[in-house]
Amino acid sequence: MATSRTRPSAATRRRVERTAGDLGAAAVQQMESDHEWYRALPAEERSWVGLIAQAGIKSFIEWFSGSQDHAHVTADVFGTAPRELTRSISLGQTLDLMRTVVDVVERESMNLAARGDETKVREAVLRYSREIAFSVAEVYAHAAEARGAWDARLEALVVDAVIRGEADDSMQSRASALGWGTTTDVCVLVGSTPSTGTARVVDELHRGAKRLGVEVLVAIHGRRIVSIVGQVTDALTTASRLGEHFGEGPIVVGPVVPHLYAAGRSARAALSGHTAAPAWPTAPRPVLSDDLLAERALLGDLPARAALVSRVYAPLSASGGGNLLETAAAYLDGGLGLEGTARALFVHTNTVRYRLGKIADTIGYDLTDPHDAQTVRLALAYGRVAPEPSTRVARASGPPSPPL
Image 1: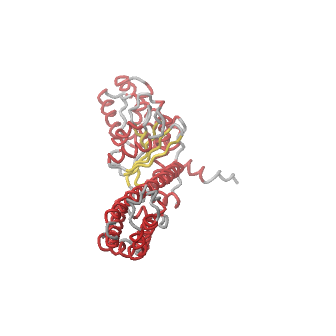
Image 2: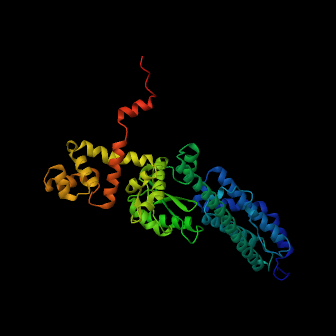
Image 3: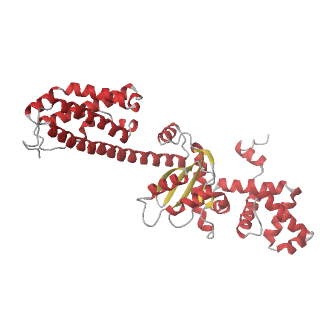
């Protein structure tokens, strides 16, 4: 509480009060001189900054001329400026602004102080500058909280739109607001939520992604975490390093796509893979959704079935005059091993061994590996029941015309 011993005299307070306009003009002039960032601002934002400076001086004079019983300055000093200004001007720049204003007020007030009031004026300015600094921090804290809540809402909306495959104008606008307008090399990770809860998962994934130098959007969908990762160079490595933030169970990595607006394909594959992953108990963590094609196909995932046919059945049919397909079928369906398969095909064992190597080179699956063998076996089954291209065209164009 200010007392008569600590308060400047009435004469000094009146002199300072009469110079309010001059103090505001001097503060703006000093800002122009001292701060390049202020000179670089657009005219409208520079005008708002000037209003903040004048509001601060006005508030100081009202407090200085009053009883000074309560040296408290509220964030209302900044009420004349739009909250968006906190995006254009950093906290450090605002503190520079307030420091300049306080310096001007102190210098000019000292010149106006009556004899013996110099120390009291300086103490008053120091008390007020402390309160204005807390006021600045309060404004930026509230702005950060509001911006964080809004960004989290935008983030969830973008992830939901990607999952639904809605790459429309509204999704693109929201993504751009989050800084994802030009992000490339995108994939989707799907894992389980941790048993400890989801309160900190989103923030932890953001911090982990920042350390790895990748971009991330995260949303919680029930017991799943859906994370869209951008700027990836090695999707499996990235997923492995972020895996500590997921709960127990599989982490499925969708295919890498060029940009966010194509990420729906990656999201659908990752979500389907996460649902199907329990069918492969020994699957690695993380695992590519493409490594779960067989499990996804068992759940009725039509793109997975089509991928099995196009990546396995069709290449085997087209290679080696059908010998590779025949060898794969005999080896897998007969369960005869190398020698039994050779007898069934009336070829040498080394021929079977050579063809198995050729099959691995052609389709990327090793028939001696149990999981790869299961995948190829299912691919052969789907390939055998898949309609011929001519049949698909006929069905697409409608039923045949009745005979004349």
